[in-house]
Image (cartoon, rainbow, N blue to C red; front, side):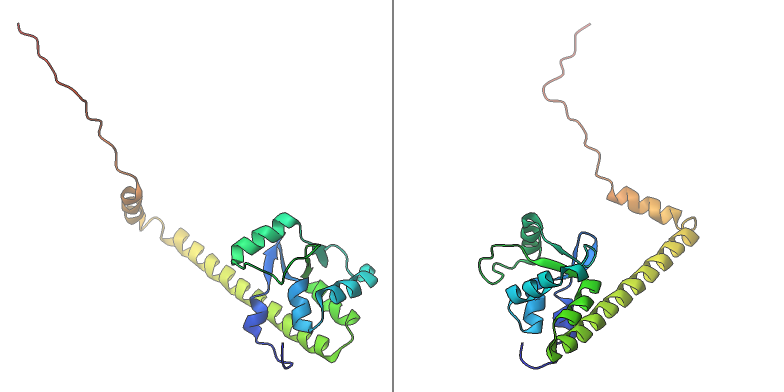
Amino acid sequence: MPGSIIPTEFIENKIYFIRGEKVMLSIHLAELYDVEPRALVQAVKRNIERFPEDFMFQLTKEELDNLKSQIVISSWGGMRRATPYAFTEQGIAMLSSILHSKRAIEVNIQIMRAFVKLREMISSHKDLAKKLENLEKKYDAQFKIVFDAIHQLMAPPEKQVRKIGFKIEKEK
């Protein structure tokens, strides 16, 4: 990427939720740091003791296929022998200690800011959901009639069974 300033939205779009963690993939981090993906992975492997499982993990083929189908990207830079690595926020912070370039430091600062912004957004959504839940509890009794009417409208109509054929009445 040209220049040292990367739009926050670009970084935010590269944060995925995998295995219950917010992560960025090695291929995208390499692009941001302006290094080859294999060079990034080699630097990590030379310093593997700095990257425990809660900092970094390698995607399975199924996880990668699922991710590709979810975000509808046909190609991620050609054929790769190995699946990419996923780095948590702590793992990304650790990358700055093994990548010794000015760009790596600048990019890491921007990535950390994007993670903070994402945490703030998630927190505000949780607060809003809690307020809505409290309102529903508070007004549930008052709006019971409305809720019942909505549930009736949402229920599928009852099918009436029509008999086929003729009814013959017996003569007396």
